[in-house]
Image (tube, rainbow over all chains, first blue to last red; front, side, top):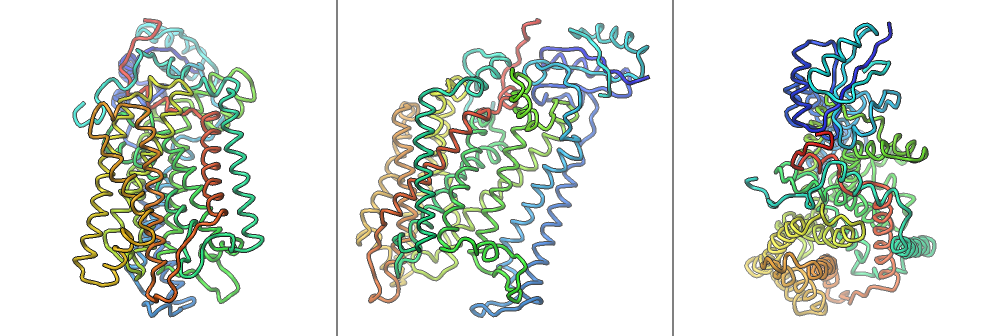
Amino acid sequence: MAKQCVVGYYFSPEEIIEATAKTRERNFANFDAFTPFPVHGIDQAMGIKRSTLPYVSFGAGMMGFGAAFGLQVWTHMFNWPLNIAGKPLFALPAYVPILFELTVLLAGVTTVLAMFGYYLKLPNWNKPIFHPDITNDRFALAIEVNSEAEVEPVKRFLKEIHAQDIHHVGGEL
Amino acid sequence: MKGQLVTQPLVEGNKSYADVNNDVCRPLESFPTKLWLVAFGASATIMTIGFGLIGLLIFMGTGYSGIRSPVGWGMMIITFVFWIGIGHAGTLISAILFLFKQKWRTAINRSAEAMTIFAVMCAGIFPLIHTGRPWYSAYWLFPLPNTMGPLWVNFRSPLLWDVFAVSTYFTISLFFWYTGLVPDFASVRDRAKNWIRKKVYGFLSLGWRGSSRGWHHYEIAYMILAGLSTPLVLSVHTIVSFDFAVSIIPGWHTTIFPPYFVAGAIFSGFAMVVTLLVIARKVFNLEEYITVNHLEAMNKIILATGMIVGLAYATEFFIAWYSGVPYERYIFLQRAMGPYAWAYWIMIGCNVISPQFFWFKSLRRNIPLMFVLSLFVNVGMWFERFVIVVTSLATDYLPSSWNYFKLTWWDYSVLIGSFGMFFTLFLLFCRFVPTIAMAEVKSVMPTKGGHHG
């Protein structure tokens, strides 16, 4: 059977935090909260593991540093050495600004691309938008179920935890 | 609320979450007002004339500009440094105030970051036209493989550091800005009535749905970008100051330049933010979001950085005397009492005297006064760069080549043209992009049970 999403709504950050904490206890295979802004405390309530994104940024920064070092040393010392105003070819202090700039450039650009492309799997315009007010003032709780038969019990559960306007849509979360 | 520069309620008027979207998106969803059309028409015309004149210079030769021996750096370098400086306030607000957890930044960071990007775009034009042959710039400025050896750029030159600093700064600012915009584009998409709007903003929002698992990564990325942008913004004007400080020209070869330039940049940038927001909050009815408290906090920063700049002017003078170097002493006397004394005292008047009004709370909260003072600061900061660039070059080591530097009509027109470009871009931004970071403002609002109780 095709996967289904059962969705219920809340109207304040406190309510959604409480609801996600209760949902987590039920050990559903997949559930998520959709909020108009980052709700603080929801990470702990949902049990979201800390993102590994900082390691990606650090790695990219190191690559930028290495690329800047390699580029400067290779062009000045090996590929085409030029004596300019008697400056040494290996002028480490003079290399520092570009070492810094390329470190920041690669780390920053990679952070954004990795965050959207790898961690959030965006751009993706085909996922269902449960309600247009999720980006306005609604807090949605969506639980993914494997078959039509599981929809009703999950709806009952959402009712128990005081969700409003409960409905379900086909497709993955 | 300990350690916050603004402690009062950040959003006034007892707003709900839905009110934020309604108020911020209104200018995007209505037909442009007459005022906007007139302002846009005027700015775009000035910008077009500016670009036409740049075309004239490139076609006919650099003689249109006032640069003559011995002053080889004229209006174009002065204005480049000016615009780069303007940009710094945006990054300060979006990154440094973020790391200091200053919640009041949420109302102003979007427009300040936009200002950064537009200011850096204006700045970037000037060094290119200063080369006189911008079509060669690609391999003059960037290490591109070529058939002349290959002849590489000189990585030991501050002018090249500047290329890397400014282009990195622009790229990172743009990525940072766009990251902040994605959730807000999704808000605009979800309330769009017609399908073109839905498609365009839907495309720009990348399909954002507000997932909490997504927000988690998003917030970490935002923190990393803020952490990277903080040293970056300090490095950019430091490296711009190296263009001067690494040379051996009296008046330029000083170790005070990096902090002095950075403070001046933040000073001028905040003045520009005040100039723009005083108008924008009125025209787009955003007074309950960009409150007088926000403006007051910015005026405090203007006062603080203005004092740092004043201290730097005094220190420069003292060190010139204390160094005992006759050239250094002479150039500073020339600045204050020589042929460019008029520019020097405009600079002192605008940058040191005018912010002093902000010692008084009632004056810090006086909107017409802060508008006028912010204009004074902008004028003063342009003249600061004029004084630095021109005085040292006009009186060089060989008295027989001394010459009085004059700006030509071309210089003035292109300077004004750059303002036309800046305001054209800013007006477009106000029409098509949410001017306030809606998601971020909501996260600092007190929680209210919605209409469903």
